[in-house]
Length: 319
Image (tube, rainbow, N blue to C red; front, top):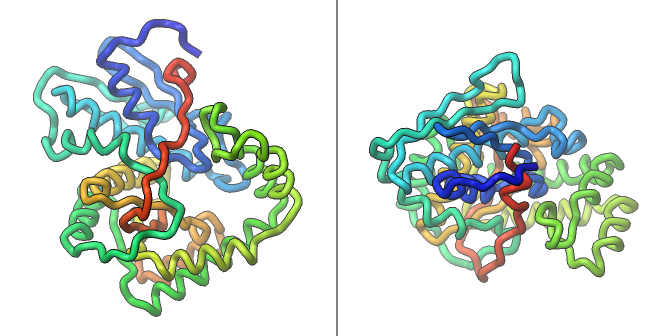
């Protein structure tokens, strides 16, 4: 995209923004720079029509990138003024961040900056270590501070209900050929800079297997077991379910994830009951919420260190 030099201050913000999590590591964002700040735009060319037909998760991913911009701005002593959905005629323009020279909005936010490169999506089994109640309270505060809500699934019966929904979601998704083709298309060697990392030599084989075979039952059983064994299961949600709410959920998600990192915790996602339209109301009923579930998380202490997932160059994401 852009071949122009990136000012140091903007580079700090952008390097933080692109470290945000995204579905299938699609990195569905574009940035437009100005002297006063950054515009965040959705890159619909990186959407997932089968997995995310309404671009809900795309907006959540962009919201996470927006929060990282806010954190990075605070870390360099700038005040970030954010306008969300500033142009009703442009659905792709999600936010404009203007920088002032004043003090950061919150020291609590600026302290999260060092956690951005440490955050991982940890898909393996967690260490057999209890998560302190104080850490869980910090996570709840992080979500609520961004206008979202958090439900902790501590009741065993509730956890089993949600685990069954996860397995059902796996079965529905893997039975969908379009969903399998889309997943396979985002399985890339690390050098590609995006997608779900697969060793280069086996990538064609892995893609062919995913495209061809319905592995829903096996994957569902594994994911259900992961859910039941995870130290903490959380549902992050919002009162509404429009694009502004999804951006709010993304900012709350990233604040929660970075706050978790401060306590040595990592997370991964079991979003199948939310991604599957027929199951989302069942999850909503299971957790007793009047709002809309947006993200289903498992959190715990990692048993090993994992490398960061690849990212595209900054030049590739600047308009």
